[in-house]
Length: 160
Image 1 (cartoon, rainbow, N blue to C red):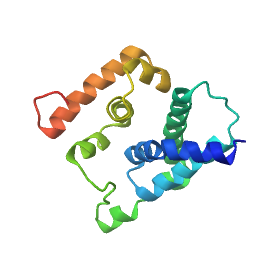
Image 2 (image 1 turned 180 degrees about the vertical axis):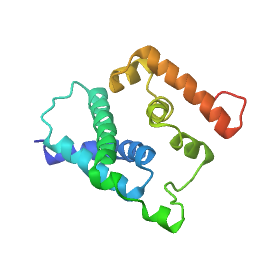
Image 3 (image 1 turned 135 degrees about the vertical axis):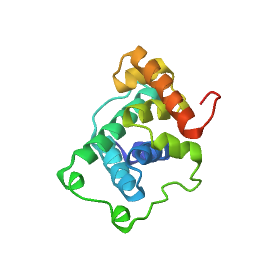
Image 4 (image 1 turned 90 degrees about the vertical axis):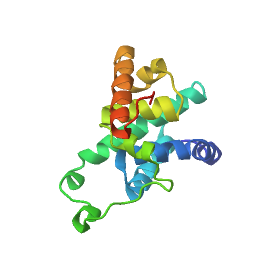
């Protein structure tokens, strides 16, 4: 179990990243907060000794992505309909509600992760491959295809 000081440092350092990653997957503020708590609870209880900050960050990214995936596998979640859908409303999930961010969120999950890690967190394709446990060439392919999808969604001809 980690010390309170160590946990507070990690939350301060990685809270925004974990929330953004959750929001990209879950598209819902309340579910994001639930997963946020789960991720940092796992961090508190984890006995993993991190080699450096990059290892710690990669571990948190992996745990967050897995927690989001597990969230959708839950029986209750897979057999319910969001209230917004019943009411025919949309939920504003980001304060700036930018067109680009909406386009990224609308990408299939396999593209969202690599786009987020590459463009928002600044990881290289090699690092993303290691974090997501994918082949490096697969990451390059996913990035190329996601750029094309974003161009189509945003109606641009330039580099996404």
